[in-house]
Length: 125
Image 1: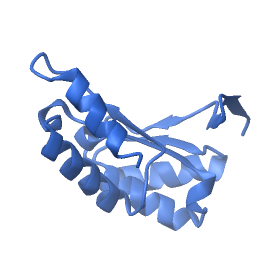
Image 2: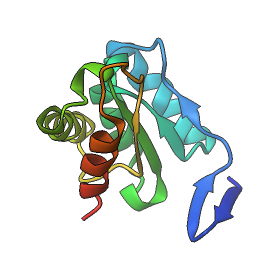
Image 3: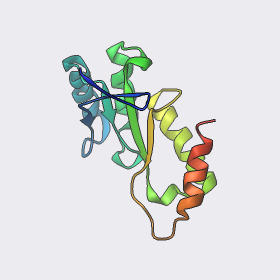
């Protein structure tokens, strides 16, 4: 699949989203997407399908470095300690050591954007 290359980052031009695919029904669909050549998979804590996405990735036999994996933290977990726990939980469910893109899924009026960004920057180190 063709990739977009910019500022030292390579990202597949097409991604496969998993919104509204909770639970085990998600796994065979993601497996099919990977078989068809998708290499960017987008999931989220809120979708309740990270385990199924992880199982599909494992079943695919693809090396982790061949994929671009995105997940998102829900607005209820934007406090500093909650962010780390949420990321660790997502990594465990996905069965991976890292994600390529970790996003704030839904902003909160109560969030301290600077603190959230500083905490997430700390994940890069």
